[in-house]
Length: 212
Image (tube, rainbow, N blue to C red; front, side, top):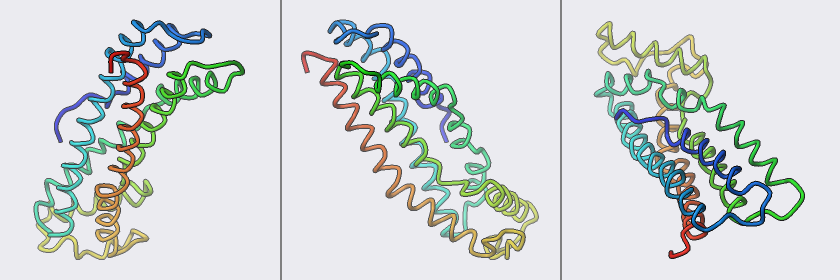
């Protein structure tokens, strides 16, 4: 995996706070401020998320190939052991700001259209980050499966994927289940979730850039 910043989360927090500042309870934000807000915050969060999506797709594909072909397992395990998706999903500040934005959206009174679209954009980003975390399915199983596979590799086991993984409820099906979940994330959940991010980004772009 490449070294990337947390995927647009800081940019999203800044966008939410700036949105409250420029919109407040007014009917519509001035066009020049909407443009600056979009260029400084929304573009940044989207471009970071796109980089993360490309990185996840490449990295998870590597792990999937390793599990299916029983080769390059060391590299695949390094990706999973990094628990990068899990770390990135530690995003309490974004959650709290999303809830604040939701509450503002639900307040009585007319809301600028851009506020409603922006709320949907942040919600789709949150949904994407969930889709981009195909493992762990459960903390205990994930931890045991990865640690056991790592131990087998270090001990020089000839066919580590043929282990019984007896302390795991999934048993010897664990590698197959992991591969199925990764495949579903790569080919279905992640691209579907990211397409929704793209759709809301495009709507925000039209609403914020008057010359588009």
